[in-house]
Length: 106
Image (cartoon, rainbow, N blue to C red; front, side, top):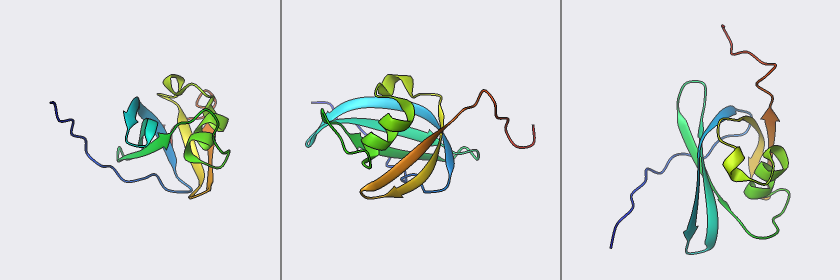
């Protein structure tokens, strides 16, 4: 048996912007999930697990990501988002179009 170890990162916070740096699909005790690792402009990392079902609520974690970025998690890596609301049953994120924005100070 192999033991997989990962570092538990904090959840993202409402009102902040992040870049998606890693998307991993897996299977756990409660079903299939997508683990999304995010990074802020100061290079601090955050992570959240999206429990995936055939149909998800628009205000769930998985629903919020799918509405903002599309329903294929493998296409999310490298995209920037802003967390609008990150409370249970009221998740909302917004995709940020990086083709028209520049980083502060550059």
